[in-house]
Image (cartoon, rainbow, N blue to C red; front, side, top):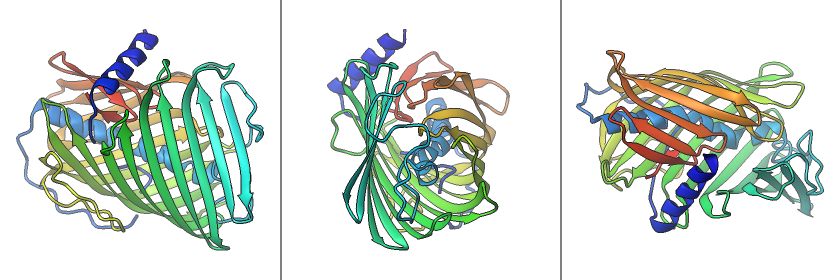
Length: 366
């Protein structure tokens, strides 16, 4: 069944390009606009905003985990520390290949390939991060992640740029990125976030931050742009003895919507979305965990969404083969939508009326 789903996703993306975005637990400091009055929204609009709120902490956490687990070396350090459990020679290791290439005294490239099979013959994701040390207290990271289906068709390309300053374990980072679906040259999603990391003890750091995301939903039944600006509350990052990274805390944000392509995001923090109309707030709390190989292994999230709708997200299965399952429910306890995706953020959302849409790389695209 999974093979059929992946082939279907690939075929649809090949035939049609779409555009979109989201926010998350990994974000900087900024004020949240006042909550708007209750808006009349369609079931699909509620589901779209709810799915964005659910995927935001996972999406941003998947990028930010590399700042802590060695996937990009040790942040703001001369160390080129590799991932704990992988060879750095590019050899296959249970479905993973990791290579560290020293380009010059100031540049190192980290490449992590994840495969659908343990023999490393069916590539699922190729993540390349180029780290450039500008000084002893600053660096930039240019990261490109390409995701493939089982037929080798490109599902998505995600490009993220980090600017990091400070010292190991005590730093600030600004991340800006774009997501492209299939072969589209127009971004499905654009995002920006600002992180301030401070050590709490030898294994745990506190994180404050703000974030903004824009998603252009080119689905005929929606054809709107959704935006999300928010801040972190009581958020921590913990790295255990196995190198697993867990983000835990609360993200409070305000949603806006407007005609397709009408929203904008600044290039510098604070990352407040402009344009459109405020449609409500969302508060998401819980945790997202990644292993030392930079793979998602557990998600537990609960939240209050627009107009009193609620969200619950859990994980099923045993890592590395897991599914992330979500339920969006109305204030009267009626179902609004359910979704199931794999660890790469690909799957299906089902609305209460029985209609379905594909999810690719944490975004509803078709």
